[in-house]
Length: 239
Image (cartoon, rainbow, N blue to C red):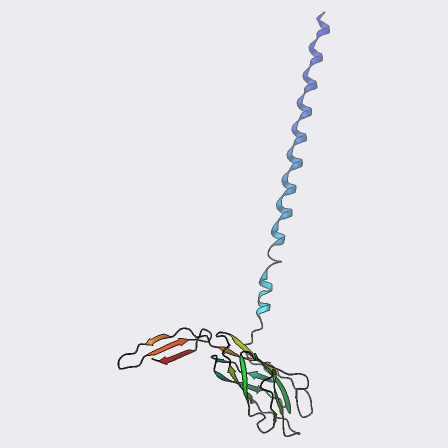
């Protein structure tokens, strides 16, 4: 009888795709939200840690624009051509009163030759010990004749006469510096007196080519000129 062959046992219910629903593959678990660049956001690495603004002016700040307020010793800065002789003044300002001083002068002996040292007015009538012109540092050495009173004069301490050697390079700058040690500058009570130091230099001119300013004629002389690239010093010559 056909009742035993009923197709009900082959119903497709067992193959229902409901168990294979893509819900288990839903991209929700793989959502890129967890990989969002928020965790890598460079905002936390923003230039705040690299910003040079906080470092810039600090390293450039100290640029002397004025003389020291207290006592100071100053070496003059000058310009010259190689082969020339120049005078460099050493001065004292705001002198609180000193009895003696040993001041060491240092310079480049290969480019500059110290040929003479002239005494100034501060210790004009006092004992001056001449130094060795061929030795660096050269020592300016003074002791007042009056053992009871300090010298309080301001002004010229000495004049250093330098020859600028032929091997000096146009455009170069050669420093002349002063220094002293504890006990080198004292008053009549042998107390140390402190001075600030303002160093000087010899800047060697770097002239350009001669240019014609005025051409000569049969009846009038002409004029050439040239300009230093360092200091804009202008030289002329008649042609």
